Image 1 (cartoon, rainbow, N blue to C red):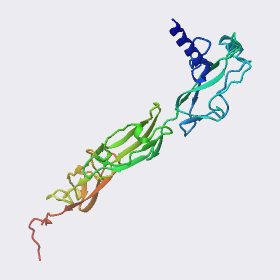
Image 2: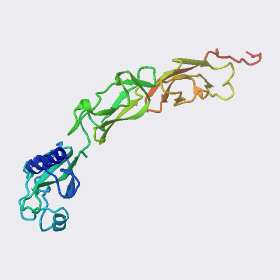
Image 3: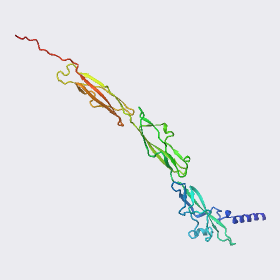
Image 4: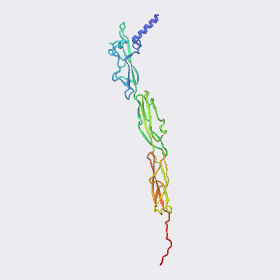
Length: 315
């Protein structure tokens, strides 16, 4: 029993004598007591991964303002309260930090005072999203279709983001394509959205637009020469030297099928001689092709001579 009593006395003496192992008087244990200012939540400053207490927000317990707290936890209201490191203009990295304030207890029965302390938790959060530093967000890349096709291969420089807290290798990217150089896009506009996320969960997006334009004109194939000849006796009674002439053209386009038009339609009546007809086709993108058709109406019928019946002439 004497040995047990001696060990207990030595432990009590050690806890009281060594400030680093002193105990509080509220039975919560050394270092577990929260100051009146339990938690101070702040966000990191723009472009930095730290918050600096330039306004003196981290404050020690105040004997007047926090009088009930001092009474509850039996802290001396007259002794100085200090911190191991001054809090004024102190910078805190993103994360949780304990700020320890040390004071003295109220007088014990023997007139002594115990060292006591409380803690304030400073929580610094990163709420700043990554910033795109390479590549042009909201950029628009226009690419012409490949010859004979209604699509195109596109190449561009993928954007890269930086962050106030995380290195590029620590961020997470969500990419529309793993290898842009092997991507084929059909005709039209395509919005690709890149997303970068930092470890705090902040995200930033970077959209770019790939627009495939049909810049290839359609192909129009028409007969260069069409001719017809007046039929024997066709215009004998009317003296209208004209013939109906027909032909057909063929169109081909990389992005569809379209009808052609001529400034004088096939099947129309064409006068004797040469007439140049212009045919054209326009695709949906406004690309145009033209072809010329020479229409010749020929008079191949020989002239006729109509003689009167025989008659006699007296001399």
